[in-house]
Length: 79
Image (cartoon, rainbow, N blue to C red; front, side):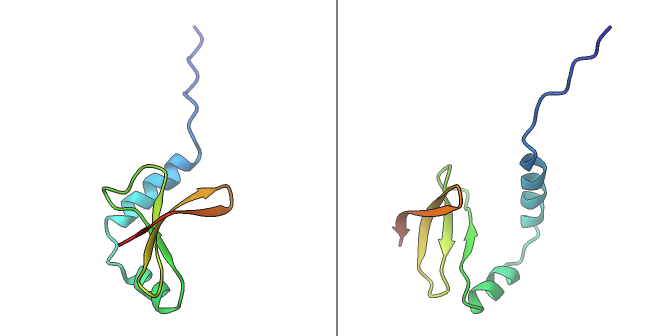
C-alpha cells in the first residue's frame, strides 16, 4: 500500500513559528537599541490588520506599511 505524501507547507512557516515563540520572551531591548541607533523597527500588535505591519520610526511617528516584493508601501500614518 502506498503512503500518502505529506501536505506541502510553506518553508517560512517554521521560521514564523520560531519568531513568534521568541517574541513571547522579548523585553524590547533590541527594538530600543535599533531606535536609539536611528533605525526603524517593524512589528505587529494583536489588532494590526492582516497584510500590514507597524513601522516605528526613531522620531516616534508610526505608520502602517505593507511590502510589495522588496518595495515598502505606506498604507497610512498612525496617531
